[in-house]
Image (cartoon, rainbow, N blue to C red; front, side, top):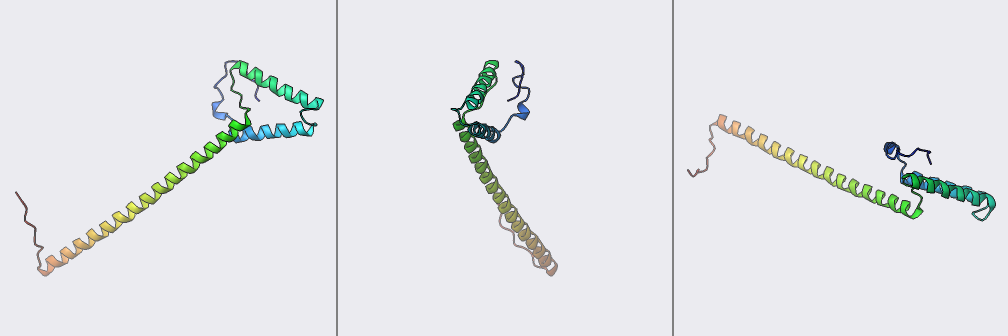
Length: 135
């Protein structure tokens, strides 16, 4: 938790911690409490109380405190899901682009072959019969 004076609410948005890091920090804090003898021991109680007071002060200053494990895990799951979805959409887009590219290449090759054939035919004296155009 960074110590900040009031009014610096959005100054460090660029360096906001990810939900994964926040969850990891909370797990480390919980492990530290367990190492001290759990939340029932004197030192554990002090550490828990200190954390609660720090969160309360931050909330009073208008800083958002993200200390709910359930919400953090949901956020991580949602982030992962949206990432997978966007990856799927991107892969489909790449496939469509590749299909279009091959389709255009085929039509281009066909047109080139047709033009070459017309040139050969015109050299040999064979003229292409034009269709009747309605005027």
